[in-house]
Length: 247
Image (cartoon, rainbow, N blue to C red; front, top):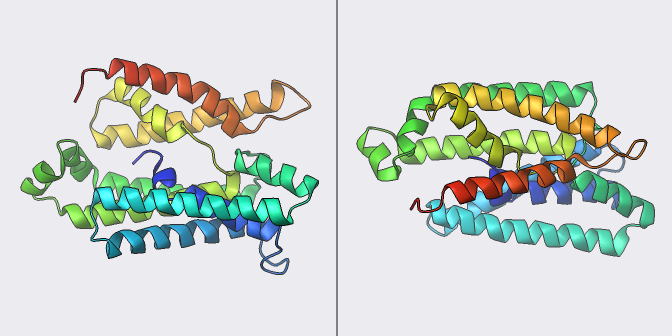
């Protein structure tokens, strides 16, 4: 389920929602940047799921619908910034889009904490089904897993978590793509152990990355998403290299 925010277009939708509030003034000053991002993420997810369902469903259709949704909302974001934002707004929006924890307050912490805890509990409840999915959809179905129901549940929970996190911190990539592999090396592939360990490692990693982003070029702060990409891309390259030869 790693990095589904990009596959489902959730991150791009959140960006469009945030930019609509910050640049176009959608909401008349009532909506905050985080609220706009959350609404945009939910709208993008609903649009992608509706498009995939209209095309007949299936994993491949969801991915293709997500790619289309990502491109659509990314284009809308660029259009809004280019046509309506001044230099100061453009800089602020760009900083948020690259990911930053500097604008988060305790209300964001509470919201993200509650949503994330709920998502972890749900995923732990279907941990055995996730283990079955490791062997493919057909094998999972033969083991008695309701593939369609579990997939819809996990996609919805993932989109909800992503919408909350992106609305508070912007788009921070490669955390969910790389760290689960590190956790798997420590505790193995069983999701009952893998999920909580991944969450713990991710939290520790983000604290360290945020500290680096704030202090490396102090008083200038680097967007957290830039640091995670600089760390994550080489790590992901190593993972791909180690997986060569695996079908």
